[in-house]
Amino acid sequence: MFRIYKRALGDVEPFEYLPGAEGLALGSAVKVASGQLAKCAATDKPAYIIAGVKRADGNYPVIRVLNTTIFEAEASGAVEADKLATTLQMNAEADGLTTTAGGAFTVTWADGGTVVRGYFEPAAASV
View 1: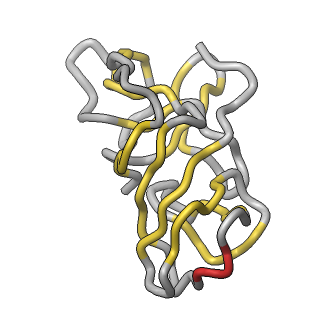
View 2: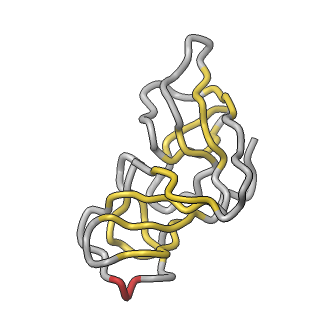
């Protein structure tokens, strides 16, 4: 699960409510595909993070991905401190990270364990 660790700005972005596919998990990274939210693939740049369960109107509460928001997430294996400023790919569920380089998540903190902090470069176009 991608959790907000801190924001570089004092302002907090409001929730947005957007339609999405069934079964998107809390804390997962999503993109917009065919006019609705869809789970990101390993190297996709997410537009949003799911912030709650799907509502009766078919919309999910989401937070917009900004490069000023630092997220904390679990990686599939140990991430050494020398990985700072490198990028990692997301796991198959888009709710955590792998140790594979070349993704959209830039590491800003790692200590050799599986908890990693960093930010996403936001998707170029979002709703």
